[in-house]
Image (cartoon, rainbow, N blue to C red; front, top):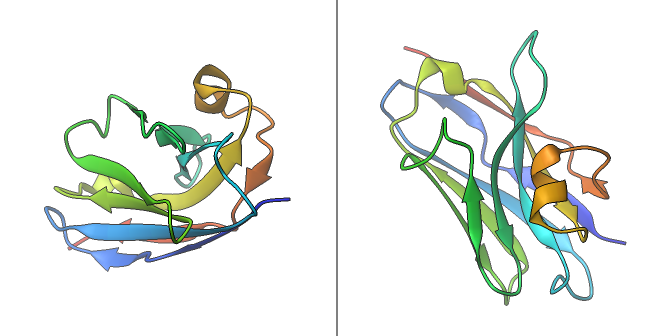
Amino acid sequence: QVQLVESGGGLVQPGGSLRLSCAASAHTLSDYILGWFRQAPGREREFVAAISWSRGRTYYADSVKFRFTISRDNAKNLLYLQMDSLKPEDTAVYFCAADKRGSNYFVSGADLEVWGQGTLVTVSS
């Protein structure tokens, strides 16, 4: 069973950058898609970015494309989300997630296999 622990959230000014990390404890992640979702106050959880662990193929929501970069460190089982040019509307709790049922299923966010506890990102001056 995979376990996920996020870190790296905090307060940042608009236009700033922040990097989130997600430590995955598992014997192997080669069959998994891992990625990030976020949930802002009063809004539904939404897909942010994902990566196939074995091939490294990436997927992004339109709202974060060209500003956020997802990456992984296979040797350390670490997932990252580099967030640049942050906007106040990026304020949310960010969750790391993992699932083996492919990218389309992962992006839907429905009933994914594993979720982290979340880390708060606040973009404000």
